[in-house]
Each structure stands twice: as C-alpha cells, then as structure tokens.
Amino acid sequence: MHGLSTFEPKNGAVKWLEARLPILSFAHSSFVAYPTPKNLNYWWTFGAILSFMLIAQIITGVVLTMHYTPEATLAFSSVEKIMRDVNWGWLFRYAHANGASMFFLAVYIHMFRGLYYGSYKNPREVLWILGVIIFLLMMATGFMGYVLVWGQMSFWGATVITNLFSAIPIFGNEITTWLWGGFSVDNPTLNRFFALHYLLPFVIFAVVGLHVWALHVTGQNNPDGVEIKDVEKDCVPFTPHATMKDGLGVTVFLLVYCWFIFYVPNYLGDADNYIPANPLKTPPHIVPEWYFLPYYAILRAIPDKLMGVIAMFAAIAVLAFLPWLDKSPVRSAKYRPMYKALFWAFVVVSIGLGYCGAMPAAEPYVTVSRVLSVLYFGFFALLPFLPRWEKTLPVPATIAEAVLAKSGVKAEPPKPEPVKAAPAKAPTKSTRLWK
Image (tube, rainbow, N blue to C red; front, top):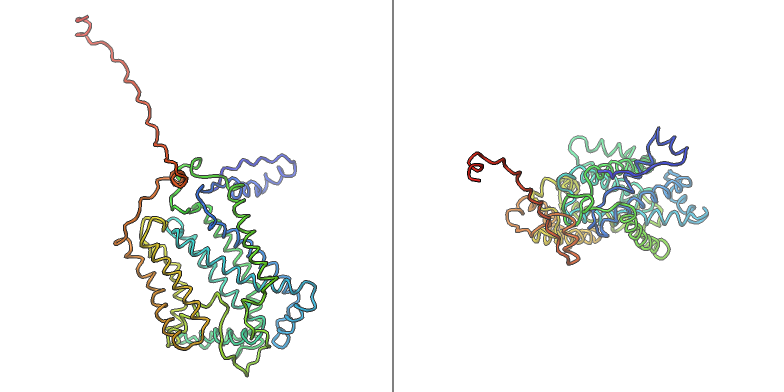
C-alpha cells in the first residue's frame, strides 16, 4: 500500500542512482507519500519510538562490546571498568541498561494498543505474528544481556532459567548441558550468551524490516478499525502529518528515558547485581528483570516443573493465535463494550502477575498468582465465544465519517447522480395521423 511517489530527481548523480537503484523513490513512497489514516492517535507513535529504541540499543551495545571482556573471572570487573575508566562509559552503560527497560515498556504499550484496536485481525495476521516473533527475540536478547553483567542476580537468574530446559522429556538434560557448555553455568555459558546477545539485535532488526514491509502491504489499522475506502478522503500523507506526531511522541518518550539515565539509573535494577557472581552463595530472593515478571509468576504458580514451563511459554505463544481466537467482525474495542471490559480486566491481571512475580514465592502471592494465571488464559478462552453474547455499537462506514463525527460534523450524504433524460422516440404512424 505504498503512496504514489512524486519524487523526481533533479541532480545528475541522483538521476544516475535512481536509474540503477531507485532507493530514494522507494523511501519517498514509503515514508513521505505513504497514505496514513486521518484518525490515528498518539498510541500509534510507539512504532517510531520502538524503532528509535532499537537503534539506540544497537549503537550503545556495539560501543560497550568494545570494552567488555566475556570471561567469567573478568566480566564483572570489565563492567566496573567501563563505568569508572572508559570515557563516557557510564553514560553508554546506563543508556543500554535502562534502554532495555524502555524498549520493553514501549513494546508492551504497542502490543496492548494492538489488542485494544484489533490490529491482529484480517488482513494483518502475518503482521501480528511477526510482532510476536520480535517480542520473543527481545526476551531472549534481554535475558542474555542481563547475564553478561555476571553479578549475583545475573548468575543465579541464568542458573534458574536455563535449568527450566531440563524439564523437557528425553532431551532436556542434553539441551541444558549444551546451553551451559558444561555441567553448570560457567565461562562457556557466558561466551555463548555474549555471542548470541551481540547477534540477536541484528536478527531483530531484520524481522522489524519484515514487520514494516507487511505493514506497508496491508496498510495501517486505525482507532475505528475501518479500512481505507477513499485515499483522498480517508488519508493524509505520512510526511508531515504522521512524522510530526511521531516526532513529538519520540521526544516525550526520550525525556522519560533520559530521566532514568541521569536521575535514577539503578532504579529498575537489583542491588544484588552489584555483587560479583558467587556460585557458592544463593541470593535469598531470585527475581528476573521487571519485564519478565508476569511470565515468571505463571511459572512459579504451577508446582510441577514441566507444566510450569509449558504454561510460561504458552502464555507468550497464545498471542500468535489471537487472529483466529477472536472471531468478531468488529475490530476496535470502541464499538465492542464487552470486549473493552474484558481487555481492561486483562491489563489488570497482567499487572497483578507482574507484582506477584516480584514477591517471594510464599503465601498469599502463590495463590494469587494461580488465580491470576487462570484469568490470564481465561481471556483467550473467552474470545471465540464473545461474538455470540456481545452487541456491538454502530461502526462508521468510512474513516472520514469517523473523523467528522468526532469533530461534531455530520458526514454529507453522497450526492445522487443526475437522472439522464430518456432519448426522444421517433413518432409512430398513429401519432402522425392524429396530428
């Protein structure tokens, strides 16, 4: 769904390039003339925010790699050296560490927005599935990056999470030994995680490219969930309209990001991770980073190890099946009262799971985690039956109609086509005689 590019190169060198590689006209049609729905709100700026955060994480990560030593006896001290001795090292370290949290914050908002407005529905199923794949890759990358600090929480977090694979029947122990590179978390584990942590962001970048490609094929969804009927009436060019809005969204998000970097850089971290890894001393309370906490709560809610692992991965995998679970023809929750209530209940449940995941594995948190885990999966179980009970509100016929209704102006009814006069018939014989 590219816009019709009006790009005409005037410079001789640009004309030469365009004749051989029309990359500028492609960029113009994709990011300047691309038709954008008129009714997009600021929740749609998180795509640009995520693009910014991905690039920021790659740049800061590459700089940190130049000074990091992936060796078990030197990793922790190399991180401290970056903080104290490398020029601006503290800035790159804090930007990267807090950037991971900001990245996950933005992606969770982005996903909840997609859930609320039905952005996973036909014809955007592949677009949504690619987003779930990006989310999984982000989780793997974030976990491995956290281990590289090689502090107490990093070491024991790696021990707990990698041990989960041993619950897999038949091949579990072999997979765990392969991940460790031995019989415990040690130097080979650190080297494996370092290599994968460096590689995966570029894999994410490639999948993001596919995600954007799929977006441009199907077109953007919008708050009213109405497909584009007339490009001239329903859309505006991406630049400057969406570009300005994205710019403001990125700026506001950047202020929050910078506040964490410069004022509370360790707020989202764990104090135990400033203690070097010690395999002989287990921390009293092992917790992952905050963005893993809901799934960690689901894992701990089930006493059986294998079932807990299955439930944890199922909690993520079920997201990929949303396009087929939700059978309602109406996309946006704006016109689905029952789904809207169910959605906000799901948000509360997810936050509750995150809180329980941060608490010790004791009562009442274990029982609450079990109840919330049932409610989490209950959301997806109810979706196929919801259209039978739900009475949806009237949906605007076009995006232009939705925009006019929001501004209090009624859409003009289509003008009737003028009735063409019937051609005069030749006079019959009886008519001539009468005259």
